[in-house]
Amino acid sequence: MTGYTSPNILFIMTDQHRPDHTGFGGNPTVRTPHLDALAARSMRFDRAHVANPICMPNRSSIFTSRMPSLHGTRYNGIALDWRVETFPRVFKRAGYHTAHLGKCHLQNMNIMASVARKQTDKLQPGDAIDLRHYPTGWDQYEDLKRHTKEHVQMPDDYYGFGEVDLVVAHSDQCGGHYYQWLLQQGIEPSAIQGGSAGQAYDSSSHMVWKTSTPETLYPTNYITRVATDFLQARAKEPHTPFMAVVSYPDPHHPFTPPGKYFDMYSPDDYVMPASYGDKHQDSAPHYQRVIKEGASGLRRGVNMFAPTEIELREMAAKEYGMISMIDDGIGKILGELDALDLRENTIVVFTSDHGDMFGDHGVMLKGAMHYEGCTRVPLLIDVPAMPAGVSNSLISSLDLGPTLLAQAGLEAFHGMQGHDASELLKNPASTIRDEILIEEDQLNDILHVGTPLRMRTLITEETRLTVYQGYEGAELFDLKNDPDEMNNLTESSALRADMNERLINALMANDDVSPKPTAFA
Image (cartoon, rainbow, N blue to C red):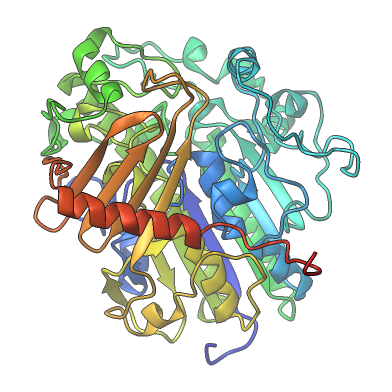
């Protein structure tokens, strides 16, 4: 418990953002002065990892503090169960004004709905959610098509959030409440959104176009404005603390920074990853396949692909522009926090939902890849009156909820699997966990083994083990002596056996213990 009561919580998120794509994370090119200033007064966690490196599963894990196999959102495409307990709901019951502003993605956006339907129809029948006691339309609040037809009224309690302003999807293609706001400005969204409406530009990458959306109308600016308006409104209610999530959909692909941010960085300034030339001789089949396909490989949507150096440099330059725009927005939000005299009673968190390979090991994006580029995220926690520092202790996305509840003097709820990291805020050299379990399931048979992908990873202080269902091979890396994860040690039987045993124990420790028995039978 801190030295004050009922602290405000400002939880800032980005989407698909690597920690080394920030100034404070050691990047020599991208400029993030406002995040760097926040890092200078925060506890910075350099070994923060996700519970799942995919959007919906890990966002659901952040707010529930439960593994995807337990909360049910095992992959993109399963709306988070309406009844689930969340840490925002605990804050709401404690009298906090709770809000989610920006990209939420706890429910389906219905992008490429027909493609997704073809995939899901192939799956074996599973346990369906019993909808009989759910309100009509409970899983349609983030539906892009619905938001084009009406201003969607949100429920009083949206997974614990009492105030919600949605920005749905990514880059310059966003919808949600933002879509209706564009219409109110007299703008037809289709006239300024997407590659078909983009300005003339010869790009080497299918992930880059020059958007026709001006800076003032771009989703990042919209979220920043909504967040500063929110703070001004809360300052007028000083006796009611707030817990607000401000969530930017950038710098997730495609890379479409508007205005001055488009040409802010040169592709020539990008530092190529040390592992870019990985030949993947000892890697799982999907890595070998994508590297072999090279420039002719599938380049659509969220599929992993092998970018050429020219492509990678251009994507990085544009992603850096998106990051700098976010940084400018965060600067305005934190400036407003200062101007309203709210800073000294507000805990500020900055993180992302997952990372992006971004050329590491010669591949791009995410999905069936548990290299550090995808699983490690930036994490800053600024608690007023607590010292700044840097922690190299393992910490998981699951740990955020219990930590924030503890800082506010609130009890964690039954079923939370994360750990309270308050000790790390006081003593960064301490530890709260010896390992991190990471899950990932996908709809497709990415490994071509006869079953949809299922993979599990265990990260310890010095080692990473990843195993796949239906595939005898594995990934085993000595993180201390091989931080770039280039030398697969699966032939080391003693280390493999030790990590297998630790993984089995971690799986059991993260299994569910509910419901409790009511008798001896």
